[in-house]
Image (cartoon, rainbow, N blue to C red; front, side):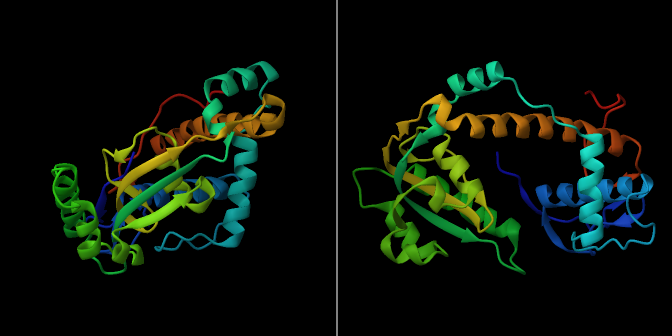
Length: 263
């Protein structure tokens, strides 16, 4: 799911009095939450004696190298991850075999609305949504509206070719882009704007070539890693909820919990 692009509020967001951004800075909701979570963990590392009390917080969201190492040690202690059983791995593999297919490709084209420094993201999103609706509602029997929209409005060099990107594998794409394109089976204009590190995309999948399924024994390590990651993300989310509940949070919406971390 895509997070809304939005300007930071006029009042600066804080975690326990520490600013997360400078006044007027334009951020996505996801980036603001990410900064808040990083600051919660940095302060927790200080409270645990893993990081010097005078470690400096930065309003650009980048923490120090010492803080990064301290947070890693904190998470090793607070968010332990058990090794998944073989039975759990087999169940996961059976439910997600398509993820472990080799050689899946898609032929697609896109229209990129790039998010660059100083851009009015609200206006950019409105423009992207307006063109998206035009493309989705275009009469298929008429001239190629997608290609025309790409030539006139895309910020990608592929716009000159009507947005054509050719055949791509997941490895050819940014991870967040690949997750949206390869996790589904649609052919045609995808029913949502895609959000990547480059901006907003209108994507049309022209063709799909399914990959070749791999045996469980071949991908067992990747399956176990996926399960460990799922467990870690769930435990980390709950740990952050506990930290947020104990913190003074201003200007950013965070989940909170009153229960201790479940092991």
